[in-house]
Image (cartoon, rainbow over all chains, first blue to last red):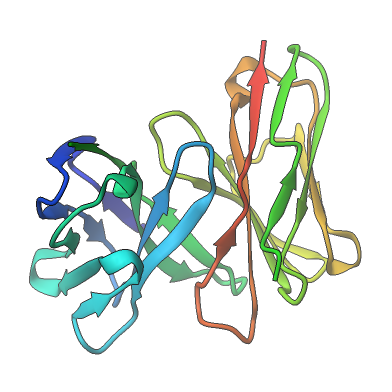
Length: 116
Length: 115
C-alpha cells in the first residue's frame, strides 16, 4: 500500500530565507506526487504536481519540487519565503483504484511558521 | 467558476444526534470525493462518486455514515448517532474526468465538533 511521510511536523523560517519541506513516499509503481497548501480554516490548494518527465516541477506562488526516484523523495522548495506562506503543507501520492478512483494519500503535514 | 462550496462551515452537535453536510462541486465536474481530516493529520479518503454512482467507500466509513449524490450534482454526507470520535474537518473535493488527472479542487470544509 502507498504511504507518505513528512518527517518535519513544524518548521520556523525567517521571512526572506529559503525553505525546503521534506516528503518521502512509498509506492510500488511510478508515483504521481503532489503538494497542497492549507491556510487556517481553509480547504486545500494545489501547489504543484509531478506525473512524469522533468523531475524539477514548478508550481504556483514561486514554489518548486524535485522528484528523486532513488531517494523516494519529493521535497518542496522556495528560494525566499513571504509572511503569507505561513500555512500547513501536505504532500500526497496519487493512485488509481479498480473503480477508477484517483485516490490521494496524504502525509501528516508540515506546519510552516514565518518570523519577521 | 465559483469553486467547491460546503455547508455548513461549522457544526456543533451533541453525541447521539444526526448531522448532515452538503457539498456543491464545481458545476462541470463529474467526480466528487469526501475526505476526513482530524487534528494533526492529513486528509483521509472516505468515499468517491462518479456522477451519481458511489463507486468506492473507505473502511473508515462505518455504517453510521452515508453519502449520496442525487442526479450527479451536489452531495450530502450524513452521520447518524454521532460520537466524539467523529469530531473532525470533513472536506469535499471535485474533479473533471476530462480534466487533468488528479486535479482535485477542495472546498473549505465543514468542521464538526461532537460534545
